[in-house]
Length: 249
Image (tube, rainbow, N blue to C red):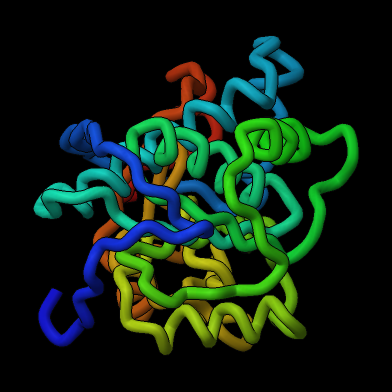
């Protein structure tokens, strides 16, 4: 993108040299809209009623987001430096898993984590896998040299003002200038109102899972969302239709 710095490719401890093998994101056509509560219920129903393990939904979300990240970097002819900023909840778990997929495709991935995932959670499983793969993990946010930032700090469940280190990280990401891909919703954006809860990531693209969120329909929300892509994560169609409503309704 114009006006952004171009960094020469070099091998560092944080970004080991690797090959690149990207797939492109298929054309998406978001149809259904979900409130914050509906997004929570649809996941719960998929797990409890249909028996789909939460880790499967997380894996599908991460793979779809990784596809989109590769699409954003498709014009590059070298392995790209990607920083994945992870929170401690399920959105962070999506980020940990996406980091694995992006590393497997040859990109130079570094994970910045606000803190450890909750023990026994699906997110903690993906955190542990990334550790077993020896992916670079830091407790500070170092964006130097990054070609893409993946935002996996906060998800749709956020209902209070962002503060502390998370707020600092959001503001640092916004100030950096590298393109940003947000997972499910830009961190800090209220999923229902489409407005920042104190502050929010200004994404270039948003990989939203299952369908659009209610707040996406608000005119001002586009300033934070960028281009929206719907990522299917394996939720049964009947369940999606039960909890969502068409965009035109």
